[in-house]
Image (cartoon, rainbow, N blue to C red):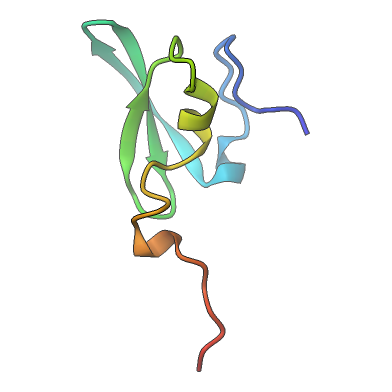
Amino acid sequence: MDNPVKQSGTLDSLDQFGIAFEGLIPTMEGWAIGFHCLTCDHVWTAMRSDADFQKSATHCPRVSTSKKHAPKTGKK
């Protein structure tokens, strides 16, 4: 599978990661891209020029801290 986030700026198929494009936000460094986690409703930004942009755009920063991201157990 091709990586849906490329440095060229395409943001195709983010929904497969449970993430939605929120919009562009002006910053002192330039335009930041806003993302919205569909699992925990967290909103964050990332700069395309950052070295870890691909990870920032496809992984919610709260994956390790939010209970909503915890795997579901089959307990009854």
